[in-house]
Amino acid sequence: MEFANVLYDRHLSDAEIERRLVVALLEAPSFDLGALTDLVLELHPERGSWVGLLNRLWLASARAGAEGVKAVLAERAAVLSSGRLQVAERLLDAFGPRRVLLTLSNQPCVVTALAASAGRRRVILGESRPLREGVTAARDLAAVGVDVTVVSDAVLLGLPLTCTEWPPPLSFERADAVVILGADALLAAGFVAKSGSRALAEIAALAGLEVIVSASLDRLLPAELATSFIPPQADPVDLGAPAAVHPVHHPCEFLPWRLASRVLVESEILAPLEVAGRAAQLELAPELRVRWESRVS
Image 1 (cartoon, rainbow, N blue to C red):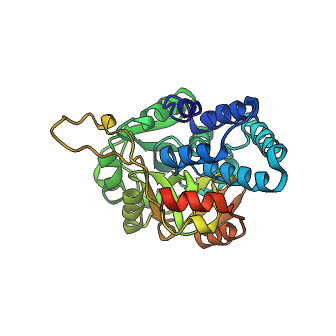
Image 2 (cartoon, rainbow, N blue to C red):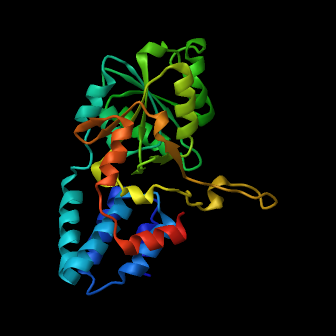
Image 3 (tube, rainbow, N blue to C red):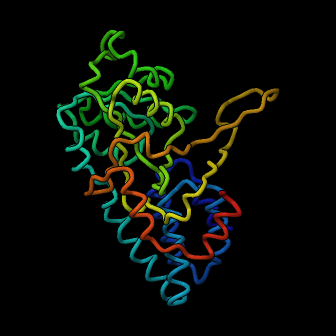
């Protein structure tokens, strides 16, 4: 399918990939929604905003046919073009007086908030192996004046417990720090985030650090899709392993809500269990349910 090249472009952000996909769908005379759904679930079932868009397209198709589908796509294109998905104001409020922020990967809503913290807080960011997108995020943050330190993922995972033992710039008091994680998808039972997030959240809990999850509302999925989640396996070439071994690379993982202290969904601050209530209110298209259960569960 021609849309596969758009979905698998690793040099673009998730939002830009979705924007290009939506534009391509709007310009196409017609397209097979079933084939597109299978493709997304095969390549990126963790992308909550993409899966949510497919759900709305299936619902619109059942109610209003091709015109309904076009209307949903046009609305989504407008949202993606406006940049309204990057909401940072409440996230900054949630940090409170704490001046040390620990994170990994490069979720747009988190990076935007970190950039707005320039001059007031310092950031310790995991490099995010194997693609090292954390290094890219750190470079962007440093360019706007953020005091940012990049560490190996292994060092980052230990920092909540060992922070007082390190020399500057890694040393800090636990009461002055918070862990912030972006979410690819918000499910009733938990959330999907960059691999390594679960270990960081578990260790943060042991050390008494708050874990804040941030995501845009479009990443919230219907509750019936939360019964189970199998992360996709990415290209093992990313690991650079020799041919004699069996490389496995899962770019994301599922985290239960017990590991989150608060969830920021755009302008709202929610308790983790409130997310399940919101997910239960979302209608699920039967066609998406069948494909999800056959490919992801």
